[in-house]
Image 1: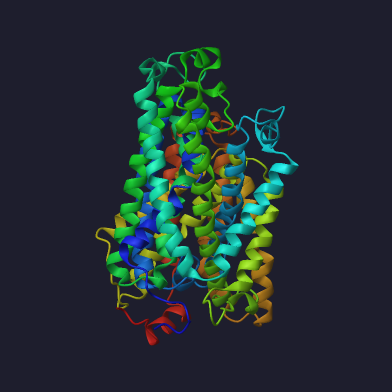
Image 2 (image 1 turned 180 degrees about the vertical axis):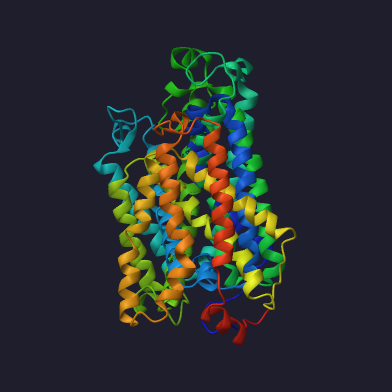
Length: 535
């Protein structure tokens, strides 16, 4: 057993279901509508491209997850490869990206309720003057209650979570697939595929497809691949089960998402499109409203039920995951010690759960609609993905003798591609969102400096040297985003096309610098001295 009372009894199939359970949350309920609004029929390509990019990133994390099968692993890997400062920035981005999912899932459930046929339900969500929608006070109150329910279900151990999760996941897979197929069967307007974003003739707008990948909730919709990696510490035989869980969950989810996107594009009544194209279609609960339009009332009912079950399954999974991440950050030495306490009987980090509950409420009250919060989460998620490929490659150099139950073939190329694609994603998210989220990353640095000062600035020079590439990377990408082409909301100093090339070159340079900056950290020495027993 490992030195903490966290149990290892999750098999590969259960692990894959955890991944699927996290991936298929509220993303499918709204993602097809958001992506079509941004990219029209090009949205189908956005899902495929998004899945391919996430797969490259996920595979680098799979090698790391199998190497360090510990709970909350995603926030620990860069700590091993580059020391505490990179570890802190990576962990902070990862934690923000995941803890904010808990309120977004609750918001999704309530937003779907707002198209119920009763007035009180319709009053839960309002369309604002600027075109986006948000929850009203009663809507937020219901969302807050849902967040508390997710919290309580996890408060009493992981076993309950594993049992309820399997049933919920199966339901979550069946309903989206049934929705897609039923809508395709009941009235499919092939003509819709030739209507453009603004109602003109459709031509693939590549920039719009890329922006949809980054901000329409597509990256966000695949985010759940992290759950099997984060639960690696509880996995039985991580070397086999983690890649199986990661690849399996991404492939299955992609199939479901593409069917749904096709169904959505074909099911919208042509007369609605005639008004303003894809961009002008504003649904509260897209698939349920479409089901009612084509007289599939049984499907609408099923969707209203699923709009509680799907997001709640994800909300519960993430409530478990985030608590383990805070526990991991405490082990990194950048969080108060109380947050690393594990309950002796239930084996869950309870103080960390209370902390996350408070933060979830903050997000609820600042971002009151699914669309706004999903865009924020997407960009924070992309920043959190950057460190994985660099860490996986660095550790091959600094700790070659370390036991790797899973060795990814072609990792040097795969990791480079993953890092460059993550950099592109960050750029596609469009200015000023990129800049805003990068500021959110910097806000946390005083916390790190406080813990360094308490430790007497021990070894601070090395930590800074190991992190210099990342500290320069974030403002550099923000600057490129600001100067980039008008297609990505920049100031058009870099013409479209050239901007994508410049971002790729930046990505390559920073990737090589990042891999070079890694060093043999004390954490690696410690991990080699006390290896985790492998089953």
